[in-house]
Image (tube, rainbow, N blue to C red; front, top):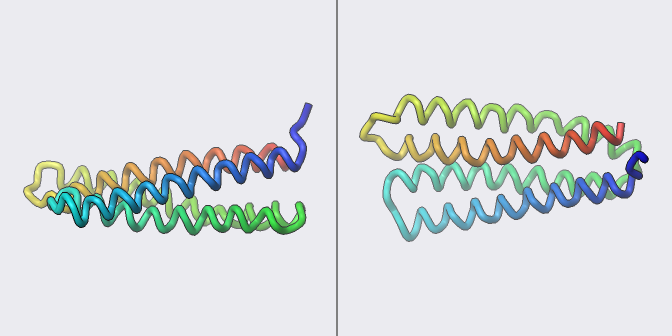
Length: 139
C-alpha cells in the first residue's frame, strides 16, 4: 500500500522539525563554546556550528512553508530545493579539507572549524537525503 500525500507531508514536517532541533542545538553549542569555553579550537567549531545552524533553520522553514501550498506546486518547490545539496556537500568537503590541512598545525581554530563544519554538514546531508527519499515516494 502506497503512502498517502498526507502521510508524506507528515514525514516531511517531522524531518523539518528534526532540522530545527539540530539547528537550535548547534546554535546553543556555538554560544556555549564562544562565551564559556573560549578555547581556540572550540571557537572555530562554534562559528561552523553557527553558520550551518542558520542554514539548517532556513531550509527547515522552506520545508514547512512548502506544505502550505497545494500538492503539485509543493512538489515543484521541493524539487527546486536541490540547491541545498551544494551547500551541504560543499560544507562536507570544506570541513574535511580544513581538518586535513590543519590537523597537525598549531592553529587550532581552523581545525575546530573544519571538524564543526564536517559534523554539521554531514548531519544536514543525511537529513536532506531522508527528505528526498520521502519526495521520491511522492513522485
